[in-house]
Amino acid sequence: MASIVATLQAKGVPGSFFLTGAFARAFPGSVAAVAGRGPVYSHTYGHPDLTTLTPAQALAEITRGAAAVEAVTRASVHPFFRPPYGAQNAMVNQVLAQAGFAYNVLWTVDSRGWQGVPPAQVLANVLAGSGNGAIVAMHLGSGSTDAQALGAVIDALRAKGFTLVTLPAVL
Image 1: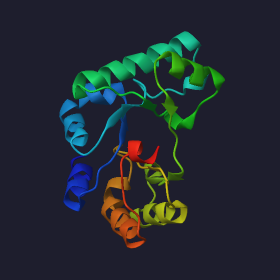
Image 2: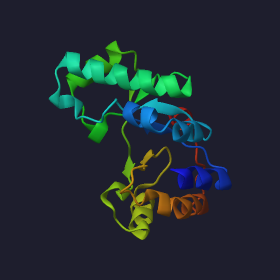
Image 3: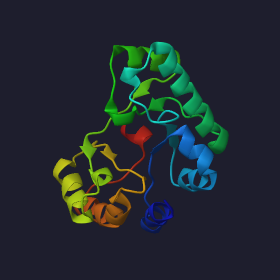
């Protein structure tokens, strides 16, 4: 994660980060570092597929995750939320509204770095899907190659004339 923060800082680029509560509790220093580059939002506590849970279980997962991230960042994670795997249905959307989230945010471009594809493929994936208002999903996980590709992605998007902004600026 340190390399992601360093790249964003060196290139003067903000980010929007969706983190799990479990990650926030385990790595508060890393969360503080990314919070310095842009807003941090919740991605549940433990990253389950919310569509497989009961409404009560989904609400508990969502509120526990939000509370854990907010405890570390000392900032609200509302109004944006990203469901793990992009899994959503009417129940998930209802529970999110109940928990105070106005936006269930997905992505328009998936880097696929989380699959361990080579950094050159991450770059190709992002460029193939990029456009005005695009929301690019990249991952912080240890198996992801997104951190290795990030600098090239930023440079290529800028070369295409794009300005990189945080989520609130897009929505």
